[in-house]
Structure formats: structure tokens, C-alpha cells
Length: 280
Ligand code: SAM
Image 1: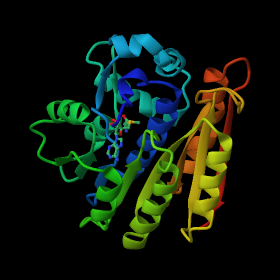
Image 2: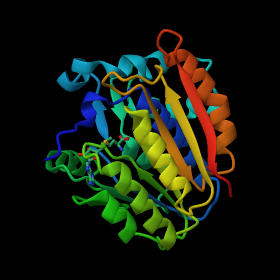
Image 3: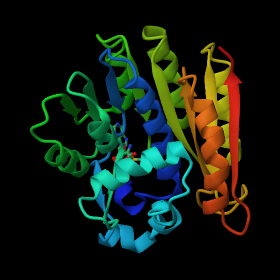
């Protein structure tokens, strides 16, 4: 039984990192004329009202998108992400937060293709309503990890695959690695971005080690933390592990993450990591 709802967390510091990285990757993919494929294994419903009871209950957006909104001094990659959030809000005020599929839908061209997976029945219904009538989007109410493997390689032979699990099931930390191994075997040149939360650092260290030992080449890690690692319950940091990142991504994150760590960090504890886990 899935209980995670992204509406409690939309626009938090983890979304800022995840969607800044995703926007940078999409931007790069769009530089070439050739069509590409975007796949979201855990799409969510795609649109979140920040005045919903769920969002207001946690108010996580107050330490994420809110401090960025309206600032004129954002690093260029963060500003580009912010353009997507602004576009999603028809008015000049921040009322809504776009999920990952909405950012992709806004950015992609008619020649590009999207495939969205969402397993939760209600979230799937909401997603279907939010993207109904858009014929370049294929939506599936099924397991996104299985869907990822089944869709590799895409006919376009160019692809960006976002893997954004809720990690409700402990084995997901292991199954994402196993899935990536299978997917990369089928489509070695695709760009894959895996989001992870730091709730327990040892779990993430284990996942990183498994990826390093997997034989997959060209893996970089980008992490943004708002508090030092802790034994207490709760997410203190989160990251994106990117396989075959665009060559521009590392520099863009060098530009962005120190700024975000300083702005969003609590009690001067903000930090970031930019690391090459496996070279090309
Ligand atoms: N990617 C979204 C974004 O950035 O806006 C947020 C996704 S949220 C972190 C994770 C979603 O995955 C939830 O809506 C949950 O219902 C869904 N989910 C959980 N397990 C899944 C699975 N095995 N396959 C597809 N979706 C799943």
C-alpha cells in the first residue's frame, strides 16, 4: 500500500535540487535538433497547489521554492529552473509548483516524446487529468522501474530518464541500482538521473558503493544538504546521481550548489557535494 503523497513536499529543498538538475539536463538535450525521449519512472500528479491542506500542513516550500522566488541574483542554471516555475504560475505570484512531468512538458518540443509512470491510483487519475489531450505523452499506471527497463532503448536513441522513487520500501535503494544496471545494458548512451534522500547516510554510502562496483561508467553525484547528517528522523539532504551527464552539468552545479546551500542551509549547516563516482 503506497502512502507517500508528493503534495506534502512539493517545492521543498529536495525539489529545488532535483528540478534544477533536471532542467539543466533538458536544456542541454534541447540544444540538438534531433528528437529525444523523456521517461519519468515516478511521475506524481504533475501539479501542486501550495495552498492545499497537505502543502500547508508541512510548509516545506518555505525552505525551498519560496526563498528563491523573485530573486534577481540567482545563478543562471537556477534562474532557468525558476523560469519553469514562473511559467507554471499564470499570475505573478507563486501559487503552484510544477512536478517533474510538468517541467518536461513545458520544455519539450512537439518532436520529443514523454512516458510517465505512476503507480498510486489517485495520483494516476490526477496525472491523467493534468495531461489529458497531450498526445505526445504516454501515461502508465504501473511500476516505473519495470517500465524503464521495458522502454530501453528508445527508438530516438537519445533519452533522459528521471528515477525519483519515494523510498517507502527499504529494498528500493537496492532495486534502483539493479534497474539502472539493466537499463544501461540496454541503452548505454542514455542520461539517467536518480534522486536519493539522505535520511540515513550509511544507506546512501552503500548505494553509491553498489553503483561504483556496477561497471557503469561516467557517473556524477550532486547533493544539497540543509543540515548536517544526523541520527534524528527526517531528511537532512538529498542528491541526484547522474549517469552520462551532459558535459556542461558539472560546471552548472559548481555555479549553483554553493548558492543554494548558503541560501537554504539552516543554522549555517548548509552543504553540497559534487563528485565523480566513476569517470568516463
Ligand atoms: N517525480 C515527481 C516530481 O518531481 O514532481 C515526484 C514523485 S514522488 C517523489 C514519487 C511518486 O512515485 C509518488 O507519487 C508515488 O505514488 C509513486 N510511486 C511509488 N512507487 C512507484 C512505482 N513502483 N512505480 C511508479 N510510481 C511509483
